[in-house]
Length: 357
Image 1 (tube, one colour):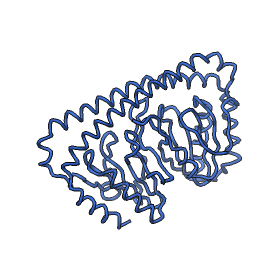
Image 2: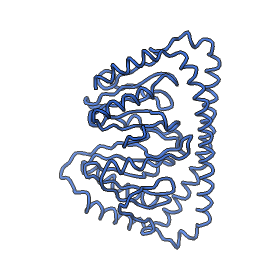
Image 3: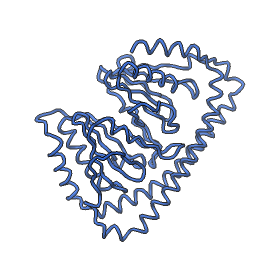
Image 4: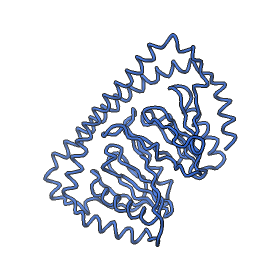
């Protein structure tokens, strides 16, 4: 699935705990059609979605892939925004249940394709393996929580050195130049996602998604995210009040505190933050945070910031190693379900299902 241009995480193993925006992947407005897959690990959920994505892309539909933050090579969802259609994995930890069954959502139950009797010899092993995977995830969470405190401390340190009024004035000027006001427009709609994630492979990011979504990107170079968060926060409120549909991309470490990027498709414009974890390989306009941050004040905390960055990096590396351990356990868990599955029936179902779209 390397050739797909649009990749978003719908959930993150964040420093604040597991954060899911699966419920914001579609609108229950009577127009969207959503399929929620239920089934165990190794039951073909990701393969089914990959097959569907390939076929719909071949038909020319804009296809958004939603990789799994616990295994970026697997999919948690496929979204066709032009057709208002989504297929999502509704199993834990991002459990999704239909709020409007039949009218909006429909469950695809992949347990229909397995033999219940095949699990009998492995029941105890399945339970023990599942619990071991959860233990790995708890370990990863502890490392990420510790890293989050350091990242937050650096953010607050930069924020204390930031000229907030200057950042807000820049935001207002940018909106005036690039984002026309709409008279009496209804409130705009916001899609919330990630393009970065802490995974078993380390920090994975998809900067090309923004560059493929819109032709123009204003990049803010801001290592700690304080100045860029002020600017993007103002633009978010301004665009929503003026009726624009936006895609808000949260920070994968502190999603409740920091917004990293915002895309405004109608204007063909994005405002993005660049730091150690994500780089935009483009010649787009760049704004440096030092325009708004007192380097003299920030210099007083240089050693502290240096320590925070180094320690957080090590903690995130340890978190990724723990997630890698969880992935290995998950692979073992999948083997029990694979033995129970009738993949010929599932393949036939996938082919029949995809023909309808």
